[in-house]
Length: 107
Image (cartoon, rainbow, N blue to C red; front, side):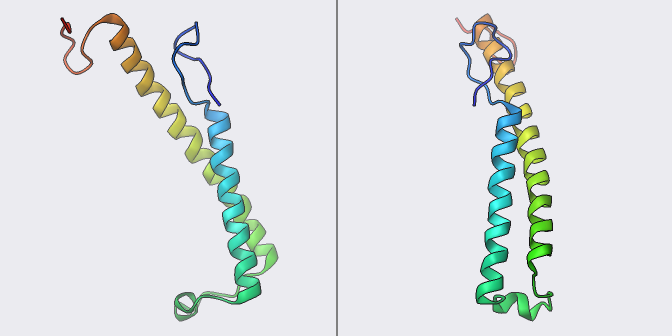
């Protein structure tokens, strides 16, 4: 799940945005789908009944699971991009021998 983006030799480890986004999206998809199946078999939790939420159906649960897949993918994709940007900046500062906070030498 690593993509060498900043260093051409591949020595620094980076998160691949596509695979990280897909992993978070798939986990979100199955979490929502399993919760829907749980609610269909065992009924709604009392807190949700008190909030007057409608009873879930398999079609609506699958629709929400697909939406969770999309949202999880986008969240994971942008988290990995942000992580890569920060780690590339810190790797560049470390390799140049300068401190990343104010640009002074570390001698």
